[in-house]
Image 1 (spheres, helix red, strand yellow):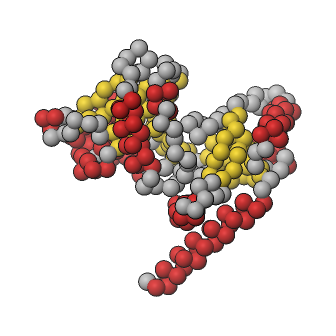
Image 2 (image 1 turned 180 degrees about the vertical axis):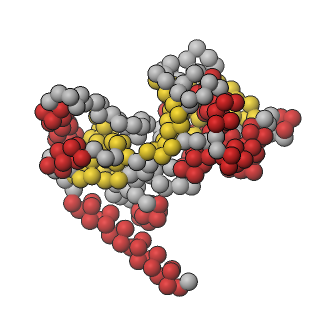
Image 3 (image 1 turned 45 degrees about the horizontal axis):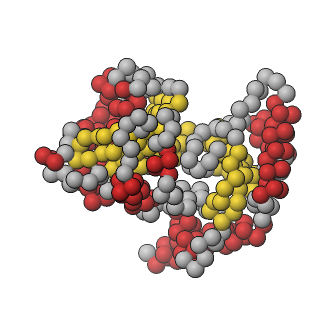
Length: 316
């Protein structure tokens, strides 16, 4: 349930704040970084807290928090984080605030519910405006082909893993709304040792003018009726081919092929995901820290960004 890991304190801060802190990290890679005991991990999504609310759930949750405290002491962690909890739970709010936690809003997550039996029915059920927005994406998708890697299928070569990892970094380095440390090069091959994970590689067909190398990929987790893409990489050189949106379309197609009813699309890129009919879900985390100094540094960075924005607005 809990993972102990090193995270950036600005992991879910606004982009301008993360950009300012990354500037400072040029001199100190681990500036404003903390060891955290977290429900789930940075490669999971959703509410990881399972409580039977019809029973003595407060006593049960105290036992869970006691275990987190014990791990925090053992590892020297700076914070305990319970994340991705649904909004509007006043009983839980009261309990966790009494336990010394702060309630912190985070980015909305997005879920596409597939009530339709196939892709055609899903597309037909979309609002007219969304269907219009996706017409170009569907046309561009005709120029692509996908190949599948997973347990019992072709493994990734070392060269392929390095190339796909580079596509992921190319996308991640452009945005800071979810600011994480670089992922290890061994991650993609490691995922493919589990039947719960699969990896799809997107190419533009040769006859459509595509290069020999992939232009995108995604890695997804399969559980029950839920399909959850977690890692995505695209080659920005082919932006005019709508590769990012084409890849999301392939998510939907894959989920339909597996007869799954939900696609967990995660945080960020809300406008793009809304085009496909995904709905935003407001979530938050409970956080308890013991490092006031780090909080003060983060606050100072926030204040500097706010001041710079005021200066630019005044200049305009």
